[in-house]
Length: 621
Ligand code: ADP
Image 1 (cartoon, protein in one colour):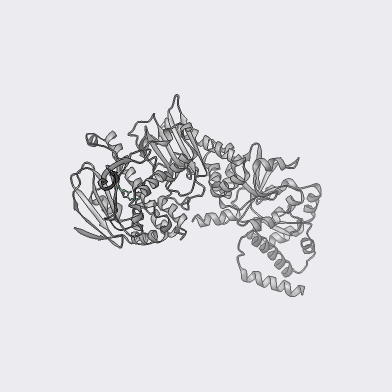
Image 2 (tube, rainbow, N blue to C red):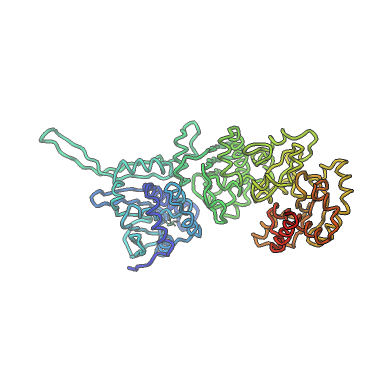
């Protein structure tokens, strides 16, 4: 017998699980049954595809038994099993980097944390919520030796040789005071029905039935061991829609999605004809917290003729739909599809493309209910924007689905609504990008648009900055960023042009002062109340984009901004007649620096800025 220590993270995790998932302790049954089902899936696949496993006996089943007096509960499967190395690796360490994130994400809110458990794949350890000691007796299919793994979940585990006649795994829990309630036929049955009814393997419950025979003093108590299949054991996605009730869909979602909440919606499709397949997709109510991690595991499982193939293929749906969970089951793929084949497979490509269309259609119907859609959009809207540049084929549809904050509407505006509100002679859809909504709404860049009653979309999500330039247009209307210098060109009237001419000398003087710090100083028609603003050249990244690139470690060449001035503004008018060069320089620099600040860019030398400001204050007071 060897005793080993758990990896540090396992210890930390055990502690957290036991303390935070307390009000949901029943999920340990779901987790153990789901592990058993995975193990059966794995062996089933091998017996169908691998010569070495084809001749092995395979009677797929899960058996649950309990003993109230001995305080035990066992879950046994005839699946792939584990050898000594597997045991150490799978149950003694936490192989997945996601687990560290899990620990970091624990919120202390039992409901949220119990959802996290499934997402990060740390399900097995949940059994220590209800057990003082857990024994795992297991034998790997195709191998002769069986092993026992034992632990009290307090830092160490033991592994020793054991006896098991067939391949598979038996997990025995020695229940503690919190767990004893689960040594009960009705409890187990109702939990299985709730979470694991549609696991595609039979789950048998072993229990003792007590009957009475005879009357009065002849009455005898007869105890009988019984075994009953307690789950549906059918692949739900293969059933016809008519057979299924909403409750069935919801329960199935909870078992495959490791979620305690109902899904927001589902889309069930059964295609027959040239291609035969079934898909069942779910959208959760809440976005998983790790959605933006690079190691996020997508939630769609691929089956071929009801045989589980993989849940680790990132391309079953496009990346931006990674929040969708569910099942794709094809009748037309070979069972031993390799990853490479999957990637180029035409059958799968077709299923994928029609699945995406179905899902987007479903989102469109959801959009008919503004309130519901807002809730959905809050969770997943950002991913739909990702879709705008990832999925060219469906861009038109995605453009109907994205929403933006706007100067022309409360809450979120759709592009269709924006289009309806456009001015008769308006040529483009205008948007402004930046970090904070409040700053953007106050930005001098907006002044003239506001005056002319032209709506501007407020884009304060960093992803907008990446997405919008690649999108180009909505229907036949161009998108224009008003952070760029040429956007305001078309606002210019004859009078503006005359003012611009008059301002030429002061502009030249200002340019001489600022020298190489700016790309250009020019007159603008976009300002009405502010003296000046910062914009960028048509092809240059905006200020926010520059800091985004910097954050991603991509420091490009320094981009010089353009200073636009308002030739009719009082300060600019006064500046025209300033003779004192020192005063002119201070004023010009202050104008430039305030424009930078409003744009969210840092001033280069705060000390000089403050000195200039104070000298001006001194003069004014
Ligand atoms: P997950 O199932 O999400 O990977 P778990 O902590 O529940 O995480 O299980 C860890 C690993 O232990 C599994 O990935 C699997 O390799 C192994 N395992 C657990 N239960 C069984 C079982 N009944 N049969 C075979 N392997 C199992």
